[in-house]
Image (cartoon, rainbow, N blue to C red; front, side, top):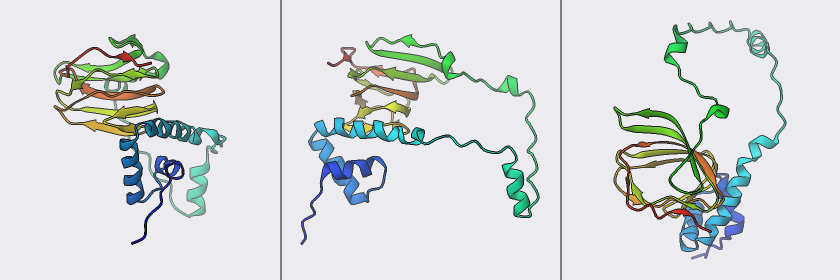
Length: 203
């Protein structure tokens, strides 16, 4: 039986870009669990990977490009869908620059609330944390959704980076933390239970 020689430093860039076979991916995740210091190395690769799409120059698109494509294909242009009425009344929009950041009870953490639904007992917002922040041990009353925007977040010994989605079921408690700082969108329950508040920046 052949012995497979894997190198973490060679596989981790492919892991970040989601280019590994399942067996290699499992090996990398097992190495991170056995050696927590590798989680920091993975986080640096994830941060670098998020900058790749923004390094390419922006190419302007011609305003008549769609019409020219349909003409070349000898197809009739698609009809425009009807515009909904009373759009302003049914739409709530908040520009990023208009977010109202509020300091949270944990040092190094700020939250911008987007929507609070007291009927559903639901809170939607954006959280940003400085490097080294440890979130307090807590359980979820109705489950929680997180969509990473930037940085890293370590949950149950797994490192998540920009554009990763995390869904936590109701009940189990955990203590997420960030190595280099992070920002993410969240949807959670107002009924979350905090076991301890002895958290903050772990230097």
